[in-house]
Amino acid sequence: MKKYKNLVFDIGGVLLSYQFEKILIDIGYSKDEAIRIDTEIFESGYWEPLDRGDYTLDEVTKLCMKKYPKDADGIEYLLTHHEGMSISRDSGV
Image (cartoon, rainbow, N blue to C red):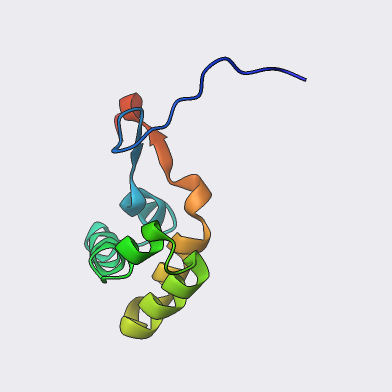
């Protein structure tokens, strides 16, 4: 078993940049649609309670989909495929 000497927490996009819009653009959404969906999620009022642990990601996904039914598919895709969001700072994306 490998022992780790140091653990680095990347808070605030120091080492990695989270480009939520890119994941939507990569599956066919326009840039404008991706920006709108990104804004709907992160300005919905649910993201901060999620960070605090007041909601689960599943609950936030459902709440955002209900609040923005027009973009429910994009919201669901983005929040259920979050593992693909972290992109290196120097990726140029």
